[in-house]
Image (cartoon, rainbow, N blue to C red; front, side):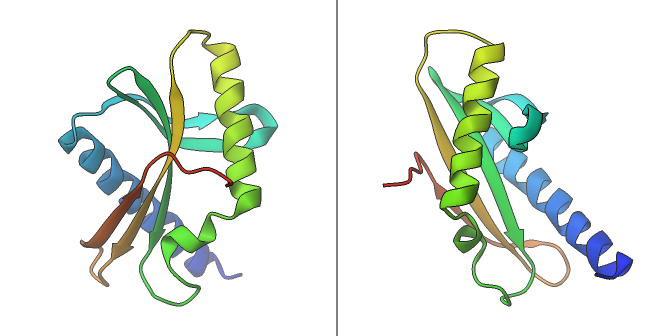
Length: 126
């Protein structure tokens, strides 16, 4: 992997996360945390509050169509890690409230502007 490719990929991810944060704010979500490191389970991109519900958000961003759609990259393995990361967060921040996992799939134009955003709420392994 070239450093340029990794740098471009990282920039695409940062742009997508910024767009996702703005989208969630526009939808009246309260942002609780970003880039929460959940021990060895990985990272939760965004943790937000939707009313009484705590929402763990995975942001997937693509700038090209190669490799499939952004949401297709969230497989059972990734979803399992997200569930364990969410449970880790809840262990560290106890409370009695509902929670869910959402996926925001963003497609960017070549200039980095938002072409499309799909919000998948309450994603599960069913």
